[in-house]
Amino acid sequence: MSDDFRPASDFLAVLIERGYLHQCSDLAGLDQKAKSGDLIAYIGFDCTAASLHVGSLVQIMLLRWLQKTGGKPIALMGGGTTQVGDPSGKDESRKLLSLETIAANKEGIKRVFSKFLDFGEGKHDAIMPDNAQWLGALNYIDFLREVGRHFSVNRMLAMDSVKMRLERDQELSFLEFNYMCLQAYDFVELHKRHGCVLQMGGSDQWGNIITGIDLGRRMGASQLYALTSPLLTTASGAKMGKTAQGAVWLEESLLPTFEYWQYWRNCEDRDVGRFLKLFTELPLSEIARLEALDGAEINEAKKVLATEATAMVHGRAAALQASETARQTFEEGALAESLPSVDIGRDEIEAGLGALAAFVKAGLVTSTSEARRQIKGGGLKINDETVADERAVIGAGDVTEGVVKLSLGRKRHVLLKLI
RNA sequence: GGGGGAGUGUCCCGAGCGGCAAAGGGGGCGGACUGUAAAUCCGCUGGCUACGCCUUCGUAGGUUCGAGUCCUACCUCCCCCA
Image 1: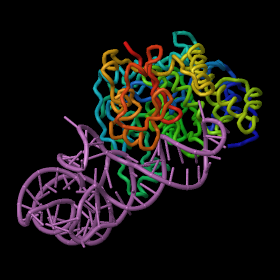
Image 2: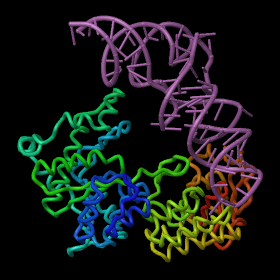
Image 3: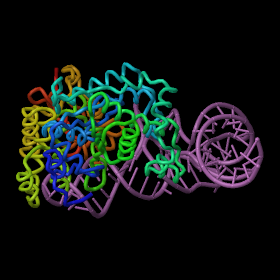
Image 4: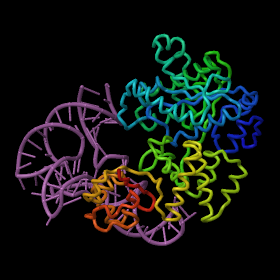
């Protein structure tokens, strides 16, 4: 990647400045295209889950920036490819998803996208086609005649992703091998249907995207482009978007706003600057100021990161409330009303609810055994009092203003709300 | 088709003379220290109606007082020969 490349287009300028760019097939060519104002680009998303999580956020932001800088984003749903199963799932038995599930997942994903992109019929409006539209109608013989003959197995075998698998004697199924072809075909199809000339994706998608460009050339499409974003990990090497509790979902019903805010608030010092650039839209000058903060001061930057990132997904009002909840909880040690909560019957408390059961009910631990262990380790608190005895019982006397506060460690709190 | 090897705690990697809830890592969680950070140190890391009971070592049987460990068949993966 030439570091001295000076983009003329806003799109590439933003991508480069903010750290979204890993590789591009033709920076100068793409720059021109972007500058002309009618850049149409796509990223593919499979429909294997009911929503999207932070792991996809960089891709989502790429499309968002594309739209903000005058391009037209296409979020391609892999409704067709999802029907076949996840190819790279080396462990998980690839469960075949029913069409209803896929359709439901698509809806969930669309809900997420609607927060980041403007959809519609206009020139710069985002669209969300589904590759089931064309893959489903595909006939094997026709596909081989018209598309298959353009693929060079020699070339595909030489691709890093494939070569690695072969060298390591790892299974590479025919299906998986074909995924590349389908993905390449998607690209060409999107070019035909919508004039799409750029496919973006994570750096692991590079080979697949290039294969699409290649296919496009052989099938007479105009010049297509590839652009990838770096594969993100935290400063200590963990994958983005996964925590022990599960994925960091971009949907309130799957992950409460407060916890989403907390996810960003708890990032490592070394990640703050990078994340501010990637996951907020603050001006770079402001980010530069924030990331220059030293020592404990950096916490201010983390709060800004958390609030800005949360505002984009859940709205500013909810983000500010999460921020306020965190302030009350951590800085004042007060009982914040808006912590995540679990309803519980009044009679249950009045009869005396065992602490073990209560923590399981709150979802802070997964079993009573774990609750016992946590109590031994001093990790559980009721109303900020460490639970010393596993036989402790929560009674009416523990209720303040209709709630009992349960905590696991210093950071995870859940309110039992009496109903 | 013939010969050889492997599948272990449902996060991963990996030890395991017939007495095993099963060594050791990594990861994760909790505690201490901090700044809701990192690093470091300590503890925990099958379940339950819990001084006891139940379920775990690819699957199904068998031998044995007792099986992850021995035998048989099957499944899956790898290597060598054809």
